[in-house]
Length: 351
Image 1 (cartoon, one colour):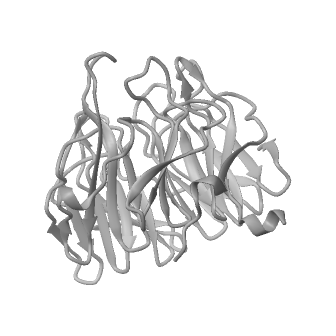
Image 2 (image 1 turned 90 degrees about the horizontal axis):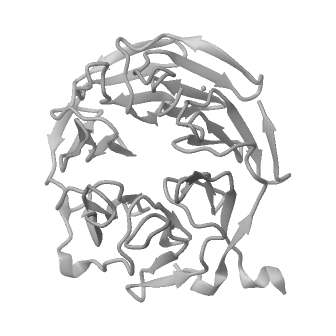
């Protein structure tokens, strides 16, 4: 498949958010983007939902911070998260996008934040999380929308929170995550048919705030990140790229991957029109980055794209109709209220 050239990507500024937002969640229902929760400039959880329609470019007013969100048909399921007192929540709520109203649903068995959630056969699968005791959990639970019940499934071998999950056929992959603020390299997969867990080769290195992309070929791509925490001067950013092939159940050798152009962490990362695209973040610069790179699979190299209109890190992003929407984030010390979109448009559309 032909991929677009670097010149065919561009950025466009869209309607501004009513207020700055960070650590929010984006969901897409019927081509429209819903922004749920997050924190404001003071660090307090935002209880609102914002609706953005790409067609009319309008933002209209209509929840807990760091909640897990899943889309079930025309409804958005919100699970756990952190309340105003900074404690985990067990509350579960459902937003009906057609009716425009919320309903309480069956709560979790215990209060959790940092749950990872995905959808299989119309049911939500929630993995791990961190409890009120600040310890990670190994729980795997399934929510049935029709019955409004949570069912326990076999727990994963390694407790963790903030893990990356991805569903391929009947297998749920769970990569990385955190334990007591420390990143873990554990990589496990749950087989829904056999109801069993398998431990896969561990991730090559521990990293925080890196990019995670699952490409259409079922490959997990880990990009950049932070090797060591601490102050800005002592932070060790990386441009390493690690790729796991689910068909071969192995990590590609380092000589088979191409490092990014720039060492960076806390950036937007997505698969867009046959390319891995990374935007913004933090690096060895005194402020947030505006640079954007994309990997060309045929040329096997990273290419520089047009920069973002506003440099930022800690953004939230989503792909809707072959467009990358980047929403909010932090620019130096200020929470950003801008909504940008990275568009791919065929040259023929301008002729």
